[in-house]
Image (cartoon, rainbow, N blue to C red; front, side, top):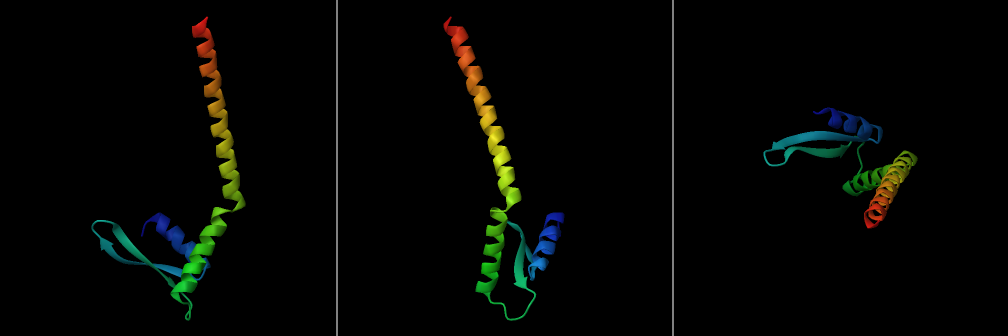
Amino acid sequence: MAQRMKSLNTQLRKKGLEIVQESNDPEFGPVYTITPKKPGITNSDLAYRLYYWGETAKWSATRRKAIEKATNRINRIKAQDAASRKESSESSSE
Protein backbone atom coordinates (compact mmCIF):
# COMPACT_ATOMS: atom_id res chain seq x y z
CA MET A 1 0.00 0.00 0.00
CA ALA A 2 1.36 3.42 -0.92
CA GLN A 3 2.34 5.93 1.75
CA ARG A 4 -0.75 8.06 1.09
CA MET A 5 -3.02 5.07 1.54
CA LYS A 6 -1.30 4.17 4.84
CA SER A 7 -1.92 7.71 6.05
CA LEU A 8 -5.54 7.54 4.92
CA ASN A 9 -5.96 4.15 6.61
CA THR A 10 -4.65 5.63 9.88
CA GLN A 11 -7.07 8.55 9.62
CA LEU A 12 -9.98 6.23 8.85
CA ARG A 13 -9.13 3.99 11.81
CA LYS A 14 -9.49 6.99 14.10
CA LYS A 15 -13.02 7.35 12.70
CA GLY A 16 -13.81 3.64 13.23
CA LEU A 17 -13.36 2.68 9.58
CA GLU A 18 -10.89 0.56 7.66
CA ILE A 19 -9.71 0.65 4.05
CA VAL A 20 -9.09 -2.71 2.39
CA GLN A 21 -7.44 -3.27 -1.00
CA GLU A 22 -9.75 -5.51 -3.02
CA SER A 23 -8.11 -6.05 -6.39
CA ASN A 24 -6.02 -4.36 -9.03
CA ASP A 25 -7.99 -3.13 -12.04
CA PRO A 26 -5.68 -2.86 -15.07
CA GLU A 27 -7.43 0.32 -16.25
CA PHE A 28 -7.91 2.16 -12.95
CA GLY A 29 -5.28 0.63 -10.66
CA PRO A 30 -5.92 -0.66 -7.14
CA VAL A 31 -9.52 -0.90 -5.94
CA TYR A 32 -10.23 -0.16 -2.28
CA THR A 33 -13.26 -0.77 -0.07
CA ILE A 34 -14.00 1.18 3.09
CA THR A 35 -15.58 -0.95 5.79
CA PRO A 36 -16.64 -0.20 9.36
CA LYS A 37 -14.62 -1.78 12.16
CA LYS A 38 -17.61 -1.87 14.50
CA PRO A 39 -20.52 -4.24 13.87
CA GLY A 40 -23.96 -2.79 13.24
CA ILE A 41 -22.90 0.13 11.04
CA THR A 42 -24.94 0.31 7.85
CA ASN A 43 -23.81 1.65 4.49
CA SER A 44 -25.82 4.83 5.04
CA ASP A 45 -24.08 5.35 8.40
CA LEU A 46 -20.75 4.82 6.69
CA ALA A 47 -21.64 7.24 3.89
CA TYR A 48 -22.73 9.87 6.41
CA ARG A 49 -19.50 9.50 8.38
CA LEU A 50 -17.41 9.97 5.24
CA TYR A 51 -19.55 12.94 4.13
CA TYR A 52 -19.36 14.59 7.55
CA TRP A 53 -15.62 14.00 7.75
CA GLY A 54 -15.14 15.57 4.32
CA GLU A 55 -17.30 18.58 5.17
CA THR A 56 -15.52 19.27 8.46
CA ALA A 57 -12.15 19.00 6.70
CA LYS A 58 -13.37 21.28 3.92
CA TRP A 59 -14.29 24.06 6.33
CA SER A 60 -11.47 23.59 8.83
CA ALA A 61 -9.61 26.66 10.05
CA THR A 62 -6.34 25.42 8.56
CA ARG A 63 -7.88 25.05 5.12
CA ARG A 64 -9.59 28.43 5.31
CA LYS A 65 -6.32 30.11 6.29
CA ALA A 66 -4.50 28.43 3.40
CA ILE A 67 -7.22 29.53 0.96
CA GLU A 68 -7.09 33.10 2.28
CA LYS A 69 -3.29 33.17 1.99
CA ALA A 70 -3.42 31.86 -1.59
CA THR A 71 -6.17 34.33 -2.52
CA ASN A 72 -4.13 37.24 -1.16
CA ARG A 73 -1.07 36.08 -3.11
CA ILE A 74 -3.09 35.72 -6.34
CA ASN A 75 -4.66 39.16 -5.90
CA ARG A 76 -1.23 40.70 -5.26
CA ILE A 77 0.16 39.09 -8.44
CA LYS A 78 -2.85 40.30 -10.47
CA ALA A 79 -2.40 43.83 -9.12
CA GLN A 80 1.29 43.79 -10.05
CA ASP A 81 0.46 42.55 -13.56
CA ALA A 82 -2.20 45.23 -14.00
CA ALA A 83 0.20 47.93 -12.80
CA SER A 84 2.95 46.76 -15.15
CA ARG A 85 0.50 46.68 -18.09
CA LYS A 86 -0.70 50.17 -17.24
CA GLU A 87 2.88 51.47 -17.09
CA SER A 88 3.78 49.83 -20.39
CA SER A 89 0.67 51.22 -22.11
CA GLU A 90 1.40 54.73 -20.79
CA SER A 91 5.01 54.59 -21.95
CA SER A 92 4.04 53.32 -25.42
CA SER A 93 1.44 56.09 -25.89
CA GLU A 94 4.01 58.83 -25.19
